[in-house]
Image 1 (cartoon, rainbow, N blue to C red):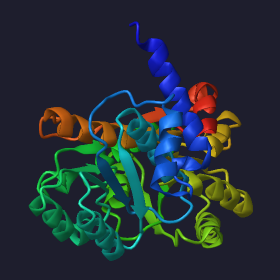
Image 2: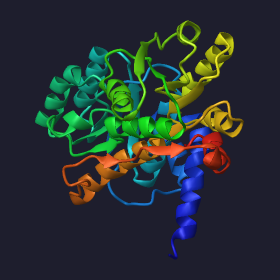
Image 3: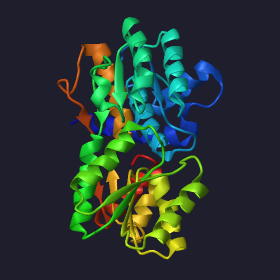
Length: 334
C-alpha cells in the first residue's frame, strides 16, 4: 500500500506522455529514451533489461480506437522499461510484412491482431521459429492458440454480439441492421452473427466502405429510407456511430443508434440520448495488458489465461455511466 503514491505518479506521467506527441516524435533513440524516462519520473518501475516489443495491428489511418490501445501499451512500456514500437496496416498482406520486419529487427516480443487470420498464419510461424514470444490482441481469439501465441487479450466477439442482441430485446426493438465497415474482418462478422443469434427480431447486415464516411452515411441513410420499420442500427466502431446519427437525421428515421466501442463522442452521445448504448471492450486495457504480460513472460515465465482468452469485455455502457466515463474518454484512456 505504501507504493500507491508512486504508482499514481507514474500513471499520471504516462497519460501526460501520451498527450505530448505520444512519446514517439522525432529526435532519435536517445531523445526517445529521455522522454520516456521523464514520463516515468526519471526511472521505470522495474530494473529488468530494456527489451523491445513491437505491436502490429490491422488499424487503418485515423481510427481513434487504436489511439486508445496505444495509450495503454505506451503506459505499460514506460513502467516496464520497454522500448515500444507500433506499426499498422489495414491490408492483411502488408500487416504480415510488418510482422516480418519486426522479426528481422530481432525484437524481444510481438503483439499482433488477427483480423484476417489466414494472412497472418505464416508470419506468426516465422516469429515462433525465431523464438519471439507473441501475444494476440483484440481480434483472433479463435486462432490465437493454434498459431502459437502465449495468450489472447480482448473480448469474445460472438459473446459481445449476443449481449447486443439481448440488450436490443430489453429495449423492445423489433428490427435491426448491423453495419459492417471492413469486409473480411472475422471479428466483425462474429459480432453481427452474435446479434442475430440472440435478437428476437430480424437482423440484416449492411456492408459499407468504412474508409469513406460520406459513403457510410449515404448507405445507412438509404437503408433507413427504404425500410422505415428498422428501429435499431448497430455500428461496429465508435467513429461510425456519429455518422449513423447523421444518417438517421437525413432519413427522418427514429431508429436507435447503438455501437461497439467507446470514445469521447460516444460518451457525449449517450449523455444527450442521441445514442442508445455502447459496448466497451476496454482498448486501453488491451494495450496495457499485452505489454505487461509480455514483460511478465520475459521476466518470470508467466502466462495468464490458462490457455483461454483474457477477456476485456463486453461491458454495456448506457446514459447512466456516460458522465462518470467522460473524464476517461476525454483523456483518451476509455
